[in-house]
Image 1 (cartoon, helix red, strand yellow):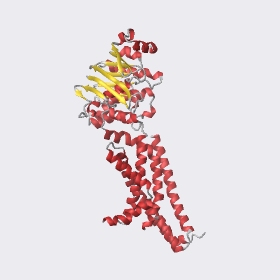
Image 2 (tube, each protein chain N blue to C red):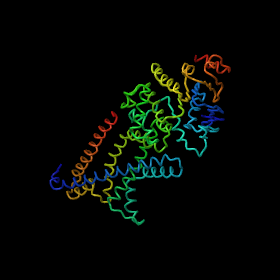
Image 3 (cartoon, chains in turn red, orange):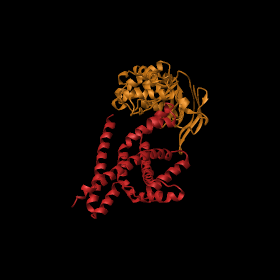
Image 4 (cartoon, rainbow over the protein chains, first blue to last red):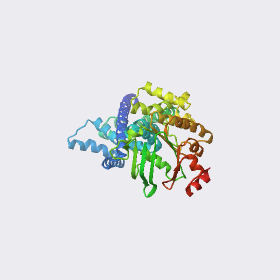
Length: 215
Length: 240
């Protein structure tokens, strides 16, 4: 084992980690919004809307993320849409993650005791208001563990956008591997950094969840 | 105040209500009794359209609420409902449970809504619980808060769906006490219950349901002392 390359190249890993965090934060943010909207559409009474939402979710969950990122990065330009690399990356990751978050949300809403919705409706609240003040806040609390898990997944999955040249952690590790001509050590560093991020995050989320439960 | 005509409810192929006709007058305390599966809860839940009737008409205060053009949310604000399982909102404090609907639907200010809430909390004897969360309350306390929550909208009628059936026996009394006071205050009430004592003491009329139909109705002392229908006799002989 020889980690002497770190003296010279440690900055590569720092830059890469910054990018990974940047991608993950925005992916989860947009993915969350997409997920909530999709979940509500998925439960719509209008058949066409419901079908579109279901089709979207099934497609996103049933095809590889690698294919999706190629589709958006290489094929959108043919349709006249050229996106900056990092936008294409965040877009793909969010669209993908949104499908998973939608299913998490749907489960959270449907597992909620239906008496909650009934009590709200019996007071005269329209469906939308009951969702906003009664159902969604409780569903959100119930699905926090699953959402936290999704965030961890996103951090790891974001490594795939290295294939379109986003200089995130995996890409940087690969670069150092090329320069240094030894595969093992740079990858070990990348793995350790990924692990530190995901592990810290799950611990933090666990603590936050515990606080919410006591409230 | 409420007029029900030829009310039918089917769940898939199961007929739960088979043509209910009844008029509920202002100030009346109508107690609905009957065996499990007789359709009494379904009947109650049809009155505010928590269940959509398969057939028939329901009028509330002169409005045909079963009409497709009707916005039921308007009438629901005037029909309070209390559930067997309380259905308090666990993520909100007791105070917010009570004030949410008046603030959002009647656009009351926080101060106005809180004023109403504390009056009601005093009425149900729980003003010290305003800042508690439902999870910290006993069953009887939860149900009294649920009653206060429904009353906060100043409804014209209160619907009770087996309000004491999920309670430990020693907590039934406190909830019935609140309901008695409500009846004394002149509130129109429809109560589905197994509490025959309450029916006899507080009810102005008792309806016995079986097989999705009203078998017999009458003044409590008459119906309990001298039931006419064999099915009523059989039921009362088991529960009294």
